[in-house]
Structures are given as C-alpha cells and as structure tokens.
Image (cartoon, rainbow, N blue to C red; front, side):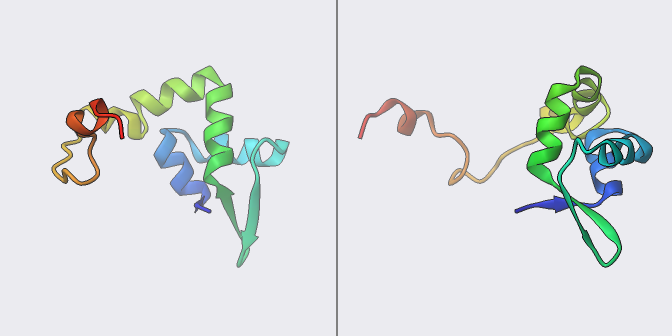
Length: 89
C-alpha cells in the first residue's frame, strides 16, 4: 500500500496543505499516524480527488497531470506494444 504525507499529497495534486488537512479532519481520507505524522492512503486520495471537480482539475493543471504530455517512455518492456495488443493469445 502506498501512503503519502500531507505535504507529498498536496504537491502531487497541486493543492494547499490546508486543503488536504481539511479533508483529513472531515474524515474524507483514510490515513494512519506514523511517528506523529499523517500517512494518507494513496487510493483514498485518488477516490477523494475524483469526487471533487475542483481538486480533479487542479491535479491536471497544477499537480502531476501537467507533466503527462512530457513523459517519454523509452523502456519498451513496459510500454504498450501495438503488435502484442492486436494479437490474440
């Protein structure tokens, strides 16, 4: 299971830390406390972000989504291969 800190979650989604903390306080996010720090379940963050249009939009404009167009996948082993997708095994 992937868990993020409040600051990591805020950076990833392009939000303020206080927005993430408000969601924690309201019980919208699942988390555990490790050494006095919140560790938020990544799956919970994704579900929460997709339910809130404003957060979803910030993810694509100010969060990690702004970089998707620049990704260059050079490793052919893990990138989709059209030949393998078209043949039925």
